[in-house]
Image (cartoon, rainbow, N blue to C red; front, side, top):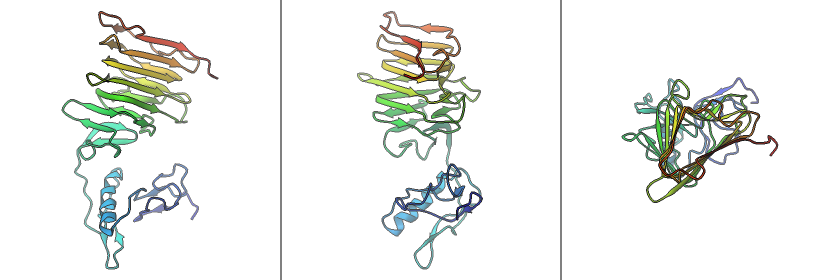
Length: 276
């Protein structure tokens, strides 16, 4: 039924079914909401049932959910006991996924991102490409966060929601959090933050680059706020580029802390021709 006013409940779709935008919740979808989301896998009836019940944790606290059970004909239907989500969630969203005690060992289910609560650190691994947004942010934390990066990691935004969104945004007050990016000892890391349309790249109170880390930020305005920058090693480098009419730093940096042996290129800021 081609109607944007239809809500479909008690449904699931196996991967590759060809259905249009399962779980898109109105974002270009024919139906605004499904109570099941796509790519649930296949295999045996038991595996599918487990996947459906595991998927309940992705339902964004939707009320009145029931667990899935098999009826007398062997078909899964959501008529089991009431689903209660007692998971501990953290105030961190990466690639549109909220980090919790359930997924902290494999946040994106691809082995490329984990979280350690004790050190408040996201571990991001070579090959990770972050493209999905939560509330117009590809990485959002309600407070300070550390990023331990090994290899090349990319934050690539393609949002088209007008001016103002930030690709990386820390602090519940907006830009009030402290961001530290470092590479494990003996390794190097490159973090690329690339915006599109009228976006800010990073909005933080302070930025620390530790070890052999290269941070490359390219957006309409590379930084919304960053009061303090700290480079703890000669290898740490920041390359901040604006592709719009704004300067790379929307607001001036108040303090830059450098090691005793200055980096060759601690920071480069410029306004680039918008058509380049």
